[in-house]
Length: 355
Image 1 (cartoon, rainbow, N blue to C red):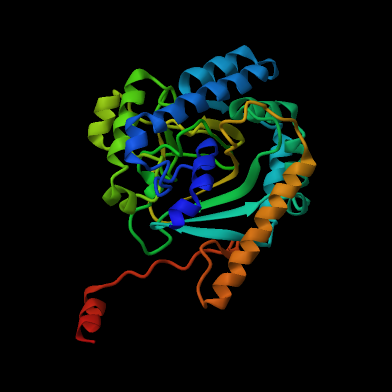
Image 2: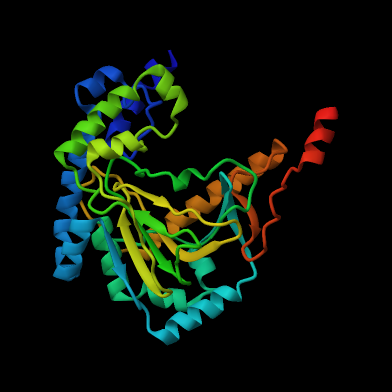
């Protein structure tokens, strides 16, 4: 009865970013046998290319070709040295809180750089007015506007938990999406670099066949119950061979480097020793893939979006407090060092077993 009442909502969600196979329409085995999942992928890719074509004149030919070929861009020495150093000083001097999320044994702290918060970082505000920066983000996301941006600190091995799921090869969703990192410190093998499989963003015939078979396999009740991620498929070793994917490339870059990627391509977070960390300005753009219009830049609309997001997080905080639980994205001081995860030794394990 619930599914019947909500059927119009489920049907309309096919034309949105919705990817969960728990949606009885998106996760319908019958409809996916008919090609619903791959049909959404192909339509979204075509519309993305249309929007990007409308913005092609804003970015140089070399960058357009590199992004189309590889699925990512690397722009070294992006800011003048003086502006970069000013930005680093302002970030190091920040004494406020951020949201912390635990993913396996990794802690990720993110501070939404809304209009109010970004006043703490004048050099960041200058970055958002940099024409090359705004044009690159607009072209690679195929949308004008100001995407959601965060100050990000990733701390490896800082929590009790299983392995970090972000360190498994995956795609984000069924349609092209843009993520970008303006790295504030050097990224090396030791601190878990971003890995990307070159050209894996392309919708090749191999990829279409794999996505089709995966959508059917994951439409069974058991798989739907087990996989909440839905359309964010994670390839196994056998799948990598089927797709004939090259090895992931570790993007080892120097500080003051902008990296932009289409995260429909396969990617992952690199492994690192406990205590290692990465600091970056992180940009995330995931828009309705079936909207053919690239829109226009509006700080006002960006501020409204950020305000709604902040109110939503405040609502979750209040709900968690009422239920005497810790909010999923808890508030912590951005620069505080995390409490080391507890290591259980043999004596402690014996004491625990003896009650």
